[in-house]
Length: 388
Image (spheres, rainbow, N blue to C red):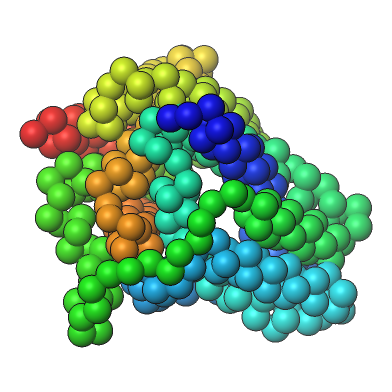
C-alpha cells in the first residue's frame, strides 16, 4: 500500500470513527430517554414498554433492508438516511412537548426503521473502505466506542432529561445524526452502485442467510455469536439476583455494569493486536473462554470475586462479535454485504428479547448461580463447536 493510500485510509478511519462515535452516543441517549419520557408523561409502564416495541419491531424487515443496501450507493444512502433522521428528531425536539406520546412513538418507529437500514449500510461501507488488516483494528475500536457510550450516554441523556426535558435529548440526537452525515459525506472513496445477479424475490431476500450457511467459517461464528447473545440475555437478570443475595440494594447493579463495560472497552482496544497474530476463529475461541471463566467467577460466594467475574465476562462478547463481523466482511462479496450484515444481525439478535424474559422468570425459581452455570456450559460447548 502506497503512502498516499495509507494517509487516505487514516483520514477515512478518523472521519468514520468520529461520525460513528457521535452517532452511537446520541442514539443510546435517545433510546433510553424516549421510554422515560413516555413514562413521565403518562405514568403508565405499558406505554413506556410500547416505545421499545416501536424501536425493535421494524427489525422484522431486516432482510428487505439488506436487499435495499445491496441495490443502492451505500455512502449516499447513509448521508441521506442520517439527514432524514436529523429532520425527524428535530420535529420531536420542536414539537415534543405536552402529552404528544403518539409523536414520540411515531418517531421511534422511524428510529427503528433507520437502524435496520443504516446498520447494514454502515457495515457495507466499512467493508468497502478498509482492507482486511485495518478492519480488525477498527472493529475493535468500534466495539470500545459502543461500550464506552453505553456507560456514559445514559448518564448524559438522563441528566439532560432531568434538567431540560425530553426535547433537549431529541436535539442532542439531531446534532449526532448531522455530525454522522457530515463525516460520511467527507469520506474519500468511490461510491459505486453495487452490481450483482438479479433473481426472483425470495432468493434475493434470503441470499444473505444462504451465504452464511454456505461459508463454514462464517456459519460457525454466527452460530456461536447467537448463542453468546442468548446466554447474555439469559443471565442479565442474574445481576439483580446476585446483589440481592449479598444484601445490597438494586442500585449496586451499576457496579456490575461498570465492571462489564470496562472489560468490553479494554477488549476492544486489544482486538487489533490479537487479529494481527490470530484469525477470527482463535479470537472467538478466546472470547468464549473468557465468558466461561467470568461466568464461573460470578458464582463465587465472595462479592469482589463475583464483580471480577463480570469484568472478565466483558472481554467475551466483544471478541466474539468482532470475530463474527470481521469474518463476514472478509468472506462476503461486495454485492452481498448489505444482506449478509442484515442476516447476521437477525440471527445474532433475534432470540435476545425472549432470553431476557426467560432469564427473569428462571432467576426467581432456580437461582442466579444455576443460570450462570448453564450459560458457562453452553459457552464451553461453543468452544468445541467453533474449533471444528
